[in-house]
Image (cartoon, rainbow, N blue to C red; front, side):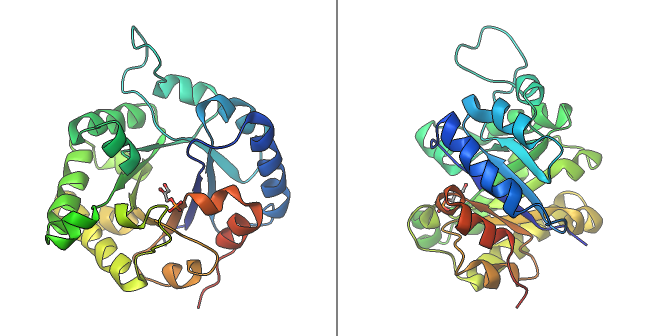
Length: 252
Ligand code: 13P
């Protein structure tokens, strides 16, 4: 019912030449896949050429971030209009690296979500607890707050363009994946939060994807969980063989 979504978040990696080399391989290796939505998120400066190269293919392009205003005196920022203009269909927002390193608040992230949805861009809203929050039993409060604030003012009809990404901060880039049970528990909780905020139908239709040290050797068991609808892949998305294996996950 929910089409799986596998997205590669390249973070601050890859020149234009390296980006084109990677998508050249992905485009040919993944051309037969039609049962999974495939997305890559290069750095801003590679978005245009990657999007041009992938035009007409089954791989969509995402920004990693955006600013919530469309134009004006906002030095150094990039807006939903600009992202759309260069060929993106998606944007990630609220990644834990932005929340932590750039002090982005739930209110600011919510503005971004709404400005992206206003332009009909598919918005991947990242949420997730730190290790300290998990150990203090604050995990569910944190995630409920991030989901509820992040989606404040989002209409039921705009929810068709929302994907929630659960990325436990302690599992990002550490090699420590949440176990399939830990991930499934939080995904089920996020779905219940969406039921409370909207309704069962929207909760059942919204894709909730997992991120945090996703690799070829753990993708199959993660995708076997009923509430895990895909993955947001960091490090392993920079390697074509690993990313292709992740997209070609096997149902156990
Ligand atoms: P890693 O897959 O490198 O742990 O990164 C996950 C992530 O942050 C994706 O957005």
